[in-house]
Length: 417
Image (cartoon, rainbow, N blue to C red; front, top):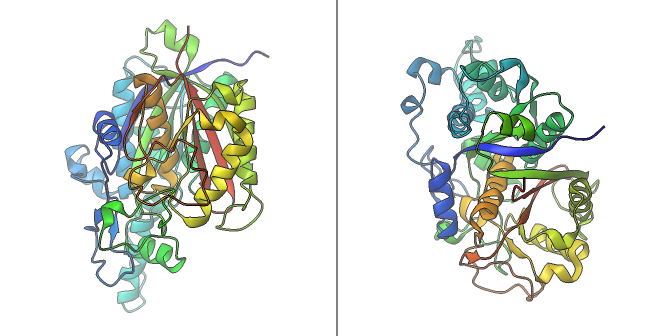
């Protein structure tokens, strides 16, 4: 059976750097940090008091006020980003076959804000169970996929994916697989995360996973810097409209790029720490290259997981050197988490969008906030420090790794008819 080709025909995004694809991309290539002091709750007593929040977001600008109250912030993000992507792809209820369009959507945690609110209110009471009837449907991980399908009348395959911070990359890979096999013509895919709350920040603080650089939040996310001290929490949603190539051509769709491969692996090592030699990261990149039918020399840009943690950045770099050999010194490497923070379950898709834009515009976004070289990292690798670089980007690879040892990787390249 010959597998079908899959292309991107629409994109949408809400990020700490802007609430559209253009705003997000312009901020990326200009090296803008999305970090600032937390506004969603009083964080004055927390070890970390800053994050990369989505800014200037009022759900009632996009959604009916009554509807907005019934859904968690992460689902609000999902609907707005999916509206953008559907419009970008030129799709609406009048020109689609709803039975052939599916939704595969991701979140690492789901409706944590709703969960915290409901349980906190219950704890304040006398033990009488007074819960909002929308508590469960606001909180559960699959509800964003369901809400997107209902909003746009999409009746094809529909489900949620969760693999911690690899979630939305795994969703993209699943969507590509469905399209390759002819199970649908179009899949709306991506992910959303919104957990900047007492529970979210406090929980990650307890793990000692986040930066505590409260005196200078905009430079706190500093991948590959000797003085990095943990990740900066972010929130975001990103959506791709993926389409079977012949279907896209038949309807005259704008083809942005092609998704040519994906891979998945597990570290099988530790619940939070990466394998010290980058074993899982190595395997997942090799799997993605094999799936794409490509060689390491075909890749021009790697968007790394690069969270700004002491162990993670080193392990991933070891894996890149193992997989790419001498070509590792010819590719551009960057971590856009230096600007967006770590958007958890949404990280994979917004970083895939960064790769797509790099392929389209032949510009590699930078790794900002680099001040002090880390002697444990090869100084001859091009980490694209502090300033975007123009170069031909025919193909780009995006890595995402999650707690539990989940690894996912996707490859995009310029569309060639």
